[in-house]
Amino acid sequence: MLAGIVLRWRPIATLGKYFTGRVQILNEHRVIRCGVHRHVRHPAYTGALVGYLGLSLSFVNWIKGA
Image (tube, rainbow, N blue to C red):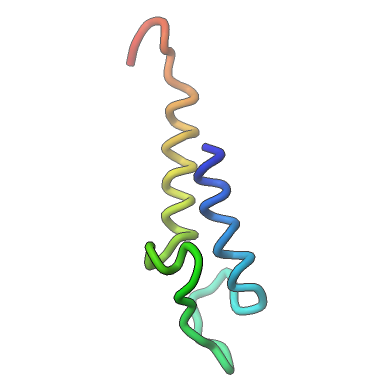
């Protein structure tokens, strides 16, 4: 879950003022090709999915089994 959180917040910090809650093109918008963006097209979405996977695994009863 922690890996997902880091993977989500790192690209948000990289985008800075260009990150918004809505998908839109802002003035002077540039394509980011450094950091995590070099390997994953949408790292914030990927990080959210990894975080949700970690959250769901944390609620599994490991003694009884899945």
